[in-house]
Image 1 (cartoon, helix red, strand yellow):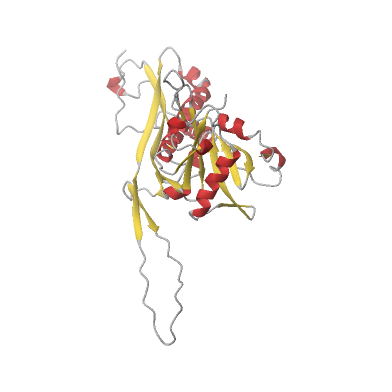
Image 2 (cartoon, one colour):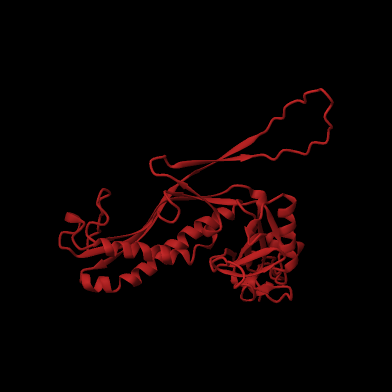
Length: 326
C-alpha cells in the first residue's frame, strides 16, 4: 500500500464529528496527566500564540549582606545588581497510527478509546522524558554512600535516608525556596520504584496513607521524610551496568537516579496555555485526497504544538545517583 502523505495545510478536524474530536482531546489530556510527573512539578510558563517561538527568563543574582554602618549625614554609594538571561525556544512533537480499510468507521470508533489511550500514553511518556532528560543535564550531583563518581557505586550503595538529608543540606545552603503546602515548606523528590523500595524500610518514613486526608497530595505522591515530599515515577533514568566494576573487570551494578529540588529549579514553556496544546488528530478514509485514491487508510495521532524544558537554577536541583537495590 502506498505511503499516505498528509497535506500540511489540511484541516485536522473536518472529517471527524466535533463532539468526537472533543472527546478525543479530553481523553488525551486526562490520560497524559496521570504520567506527567517531571512535567507536572516544573514551573510552567505559557508562550502566547503570535509571540514567536522563544521566551526569556531573567535571573536576578542575590545581593550580599550589608555589614558597614551608615555614616551620619553621608549618602551611601548606590548598589549595583546583576542579572542573567535564560532563553527557551519551543519545539513541536507528535506521532500517529494508520488504520487500514479492513476496519470500517464504526469499528474505528469502537476502538477509538483504545487507540487514544495508547497514543496519550506515548505522548505523556515522550513529553515527560524530554523534561527528565533536561533535568539530567544538571551538574549538581550527589552519589549515594558518599562516593564521588557513578562508576564508584557498589551494589550496597542503595539510596539511604542520609543521602536525602545531604541533598536537603545542599539545597538549604544554596537558599533554594521550598514548595508551600498547608502552611509548611517542602522540597520535592522524584524517584523510581527501586529507590522507593530502599527508602521505605526506614522507620522514619511517613507513608502517604497516614496523612492524605489532612493534606492535599500530589499526583504520584507516596510519602514524606525530613521535609521532603516523595513522588514516584516509572520513567526514572537507570544507567545499566554503570557502577563499580567487579572482579572480572566489568560492572553488573545498575545506577538509579532521583531528583531532590526546590521551587522554580526548572521550568517548562508551553505554546499557548499549559496542557491545552496537546491534541488528538483523526483523519478518515479518503481525507488524504489523491495520496489515498482508493480510501484505503485513515489515521489517528497526537501532537503537542510546542514545548520546551529548561533548568532555571542548577543550585536548586540535586541529582542523587545510587545503586539499584537487589
